[in-house]
Length: 379
Image (spheres, helix red, strand yellow):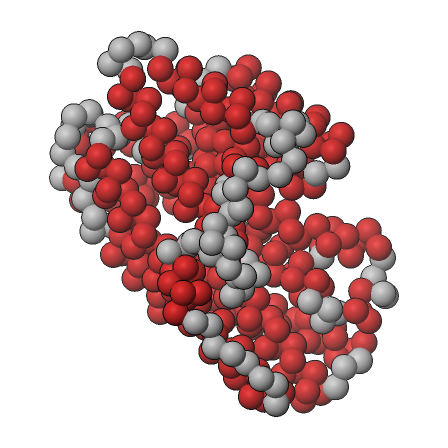
């Protein structure tokens, strides 16, 4: 019965086609950003109108806040009806670990291997990372320990893991205090929302400790509040107020990160309100959504390697840069699919074998009924 419930909920998540489409779009946008940021297309971008260069390449870093908002939305959905206690928290952590860690660890090996191969081809010295660096990366602690990231994209994964654990902990805390007051949810998440706004409004400029996710917390909460507003767990006015505070303050401070996060949340919120959460069900972008995690994990070393090999074989000219752009982008997508098939596909299956607890809360039959009801609401 529990397996049936897990399958129902997982299938339901896949019906959020808009979410999967945005995930695929964000991953591809980051790929294009790093292709230009890495200096691989310097000659080509000079021939493209500046507006197109900005939209296609330079703004690609906005893929990161899009990911954060999507994470908040999905994680709010995944535990919305669950009774969170100590056992649940442990299994939640294990489930997240089984889902995310194997592909991430494989990406760490890939980064080290390609860096070693590159150094040998170029005749440069490469020092393999020490055990402390590898262990810190395996447990997403490199940012907190102030150890340089082995790959430029790994910092975001550290923040994602922190958010998952903190959010689940806040759900546990809320349910704990609901025994004493029915306003526990309002009190806790109003306070959390206010704390998260300290950074986008400019009251705090720096992180309180290196590597913590707090300066980016508002992006995750935008996703959470989007989902809760759609599901009528919070007032729609609360969402709009939080959104307006973030968007106005980020426009004033010219924070492209917060602007992208706020606009993403607003788009999802309005699409959900008008029953468009299943929009963008196009095969190619849904495919990118499926492999988005693998594409994000692997694109940086594959981008560098593919451009290097192409220019070494065919030279570096305007024409070769145009061809290399197509070849490299295609290579990143193809490699990501193979990586997904080898690692991520099996990590997803493995994570689904972790059963949620049988503690208090809605029965499994009630949970399935809730899932089916929610499924009907998006159709």
